Length: 129
Image 1 (tube, rainbow, N blue to C red):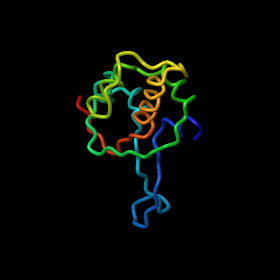
Image 2: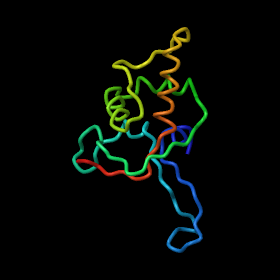
Image 3: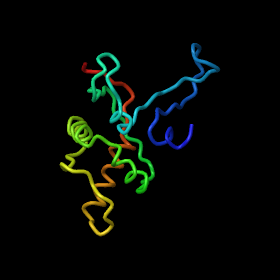
Image 4: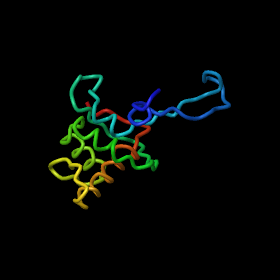
C-alpha cells in the first residue's frame, strides 16, 4: 500500500464476526481531508467535490513536518480554506504557509494544517452535486 496510502488513501480496518463480509473482515472506510482536496464529483465531474460529511472523526497522528511541507504545493489552497471553514475546523489565511523555521506563527499553521489534512477524516459523506 505504500506511503501514499498511509498518508492520503482510504484506511481499511476492522474484523467482523458477522456473515456477508469476505473472510470475516469488514471494512470501515475513512477519507482524510487531504484526499478530499483532490477529488472530482463522480456524478457531475465538477471540481471540487462539494460534500457534507455526516460523520467526522479525529484520529490523532504523529506530526510529520516534512510531509506537510511537501504537500503544500499540491494542495488547492482555496478549496482547503473553504472546506476547513465549512466544517468549522479552522480559519486558514489567504496564502499557504512557508517552511520558515524562524516564524513561530508559520510553524503553528503547519501543525494546524497537519491536523486538518491528516487527523480529520469522514466516514460517511453526502455529495451536494
